[in-house]
Length: 233
Image 1 (cartoon, rainbow, N blue to C red):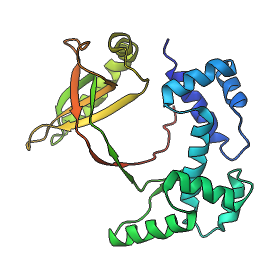
Image 2 (spheres, rainbow, N blue to C red; image 1 turned 180 degrees about the vertical axis):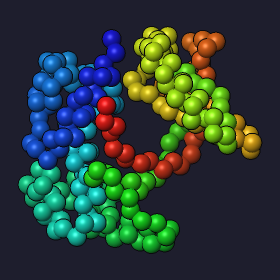
Image 3 (tube, rainbow, N blue to C red; image 1 turned 60 degrees about the vertical axis):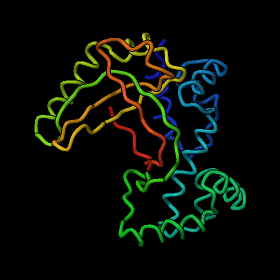
Image 4 (cartoon, helix red, strand yellow; image 1 turned 90 degrees about the horizontal axis):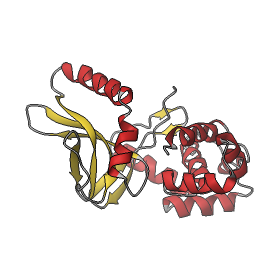
């Protein structure tokens, strides 16, 4: 069974109520699942328990507000932390710095890089740099050329076919990935602008890949991770 739409509805519910005292029971009720079933499904889809996800989002949004000039205590209370020390402890565990250290570090980074913070809907659009192991992706996609205007039509056509043919369910059924969650890639091919646009899942190997699928091997490297706002549908 594909749970992605139910989980995304819950994610939207979390975002809309992020400053409230959310509980796992509240979020499970939004999905119409029992708490036990929802907790298992959410952990499978998001690779973390639901309340860990909620706390992560609270901290991520609070990080944005560190640049607003508001008192750290006020920000902590807004996101449900009873004390400033409790907020600082949770923040340090996630980001490796206290809130004040993080704000100073990011301001220094932005000045050195001649960059500015882009905030969209309360989301911090500056990257966090992480080192990730290499992984394999398989799924559906197209070969296009990003140097030509045609690529936007190619991608629009791909998405129309992807949704019309229900390729998401087909992909999960065939590949049976160890974890739920899609990966979008645009892999450059040549200097002339040729590229592969791929929407797939992380797989252990390519043994289940069919002839109409595309694959990519993503190398181990340091990546910039952005937190982006959800798309209204």
